[in-house]
Image (cartoon, rainbow, N blue to C red; front, side, top):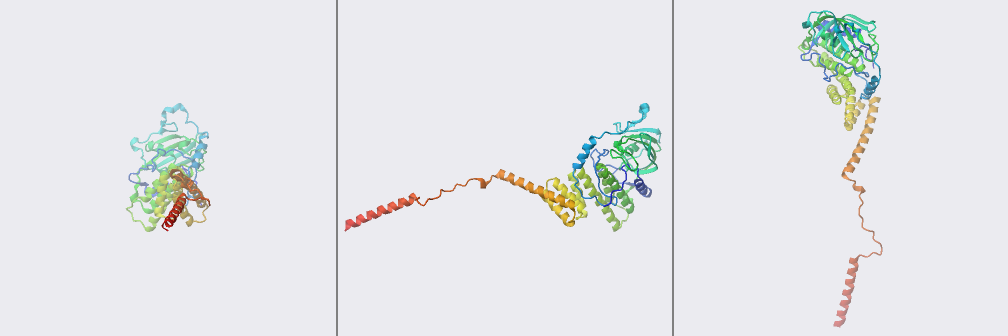
Length: 420
């Protein structure tokens, strides 16, 4: 199975730019009523870095089966806590009063270099924007330059530093942005652009354009498919980086695109392709939800996949995982046996099924012991048995009867003798 393309989470890579530009140039972006680029998962963690593992491939195929529990994430979190941050402090404090706090924590700041067209020209979440961008490390070495970067504001198409700061910029404004690694490429860094782990960045940004997105209902089907696929691929990138909340957000946006109604004619083939993108998003969303230990949400995602594709191996596997995590071993074993029947050579399913059968057996043993303790054990109670008779033991009733008969016989003999 192919590996996920190495598109950085900051959307500075050429593949990401090309995908965004292709959709933007053909349709001007999209707008879904009521969405406004909001996160699907209202957790308060939308802009937090959650660094972990991987999933899904660049061809749109679903992630490999794996133990998608929370152990690896917890282990990684413990390792990250012991890692010293290499981020540098913001630029010199001589002009500190010119810097504006974006989040109020000192880790994301913005300074106006050239004024724009006024506060009324600021873009809104969900709008398409075009910017001129130069990215530098804190030693002033340039890592990326782009004269025309387009993205949908608030959708997670770019690093968080840009997504948050550009919302505060005016049209034609030029600004300098300082970002801690937390809102850039985090503890992992990036290969394209080349950013070392734990690196703070300075970004020189000019806001060139801001425009409303087109209504999804008016978007031609092939453009809707392309946009949904791009958002799904962004989710895959976030998943690989261990940023599971951001991954779920991107998958959720892709799902909203695939599920939107259309006022444009759509062929059966295009409808099927949209459904395929939807199923892949749901399946990968379930994997991310499992990583975050959101078991009920993961179960709902798996059920949705199976409603479209009852024999989807990965949805069956993850549903079995969730049921097992809830302690429903009998149903989990049933689901995994079904998956194994569809793919008998899958070693991951074999291993998981063996583990669950053992756990289920142990669970039943514990339950049986508990029931015996609650109800008592009749087999342990001593049953009173009558004493065994010896050959010489004679019942007193029999002895009394025999004596009565003997006396009666003697009396009868006396009476007969008297008559004679």
